[in-house]
Image (cartoon, rainbow, N blue to C red):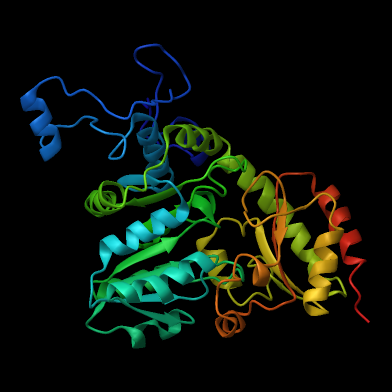
Length: 398
């Protein structure tokens, strides 16, 4: 991508143009899908130089691939990072990042609520590798939890499914004072709403399956950071674990990224209206949405987010029975566990996304039997409001 101006490009322009250019051999505007598994290096000396890292070039698609590289370049530009590496899923991205940055005997601190899969890595997988995982409820408890063995601080904001907000700038300040690497899961916010690297965070991870792809047809993960950290994560995640993204999936994610700012803007505007509707409904006890002034993280979210996003959770009167009645009454909103799609999606976290999390931990996080998570899509907001209102009418609040 070339520019003819010293002015920084806007996020919509970056989403369309960053990381790619017309194919030099054919002139194709869309990034070609390179299905080759191996690439010729021509002669003995060039092969030796490429494998040693002395000379650039493609060798084997597990290490790097031209289509995947275009996606990585686009994501690095959108997040304002030096480099990026893509993986076969968000969990592959998270595991590769964490296991590249900690070793046996180290400690990791995770702040706030986490997605159930990430929670499982922290509490169940890492101890098997000799890494101690420590949970703190918020940044206020972070300093006291740090020890000489702390090597990594991990946060997810807004978090899944409670939409809790972690102050990333404060987290980064505390970590840097102790020379600790920070990782932020930016899946819910996307670079359209929050740019963690600009707030001092070292590494950003995404489940690209969600907003980045945006159409419910591709699975992937992306990590963005400085070049040295990315090369370390790439080495562990791709060369050793082999969690590489397929070129076809990469092409779908590139396509999705081109409309990311438009989709996030539309869905966020609708979500703000729906959150207010839910907040005033008698069947709902609490709405967890950072755009509401009543949300405990509202002030921080207002500082570090340009909008408040398309995700929310809400507690229904009547527990699991109420959640079942509401979800089974939806006709436009689809019951599914993903998020960030063009389609609006809703689920019951206690029996789906967080079902593998121990019940006492779920209660600690606030994931109750009456909690519903809603991912707002790009449908007309009036249609969504009608569907949600009629579904709420089936909840028995007596």
